Length: 359
Image (cartoon, rainbow, N blue to C red; front, side):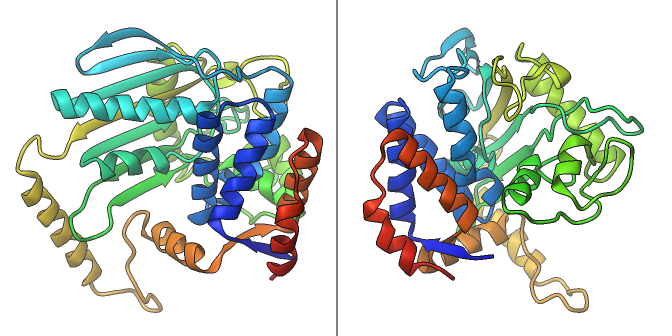
């Protein structure tokens, strides 16, 4: 399977031009392009530019509001409930975490809930922003159903990811991001797009068999991470992002890929607090660096070269891909070319880049 290596600047420009061509304003297009390319830089390719296809389809069909609109329905010095007015999820979530951080800086704590939203991409981008602003943050979002509650045979919960971010001093910030399913649904969709099999243990068919076929998996059930433990966390995510905000929940969330008539009404929830609430920021960051160093020095299991901190693998990969290029599969490149042709985005300036980047 061939991949194309692309520099960040070229991929950003291409995706940005596509979203402007489909009708988004400059700021929205840039925000979404930055987010998707960051996901590819960190190796979260399921949440990267492979999403351009479905995002543009939903925008073209008018299922998602092209105008960036939101209303603050309820607000206090430490909280805000936002109606996203069916705008694109990534710009909405970006605004949401910024409001949470702003309130945290002013009041110590900031809590933001969003309803009427859409797919918001990689949660690590939001908690990472908060950590860069010297806040400890938690982010959750619900998603269309793909997982059964533990012991069930019918889907109810989505992949329901959860992320946290914690600022450090001289060390890298700690950025954790996980789906409460064994794997994000997007990884199975990407495997289908690239004609690849999936590992056993990711999903089962609708009649309960293990499968390596991504199409059977998408028609069946994705398994919870850690069995009942993942289910328990997924339940909390559903409450905070769905019921608490007034968004849709569980089976009432519109499908991103299969429903081209109804809004998704996804919910997001952000919690941010200043990292200096209990002690001086410099002391907290020094202690963060200390615990990171102590963990690194622990005895390792046989065959383990390094004990990684949460999110460190992705942050290291980002540095590598910035230097060497971002590998994009030929299938995703073909999709970007097809979308560009559809919306009149010239691809001639990318042709030499694509020819020279095959690996």
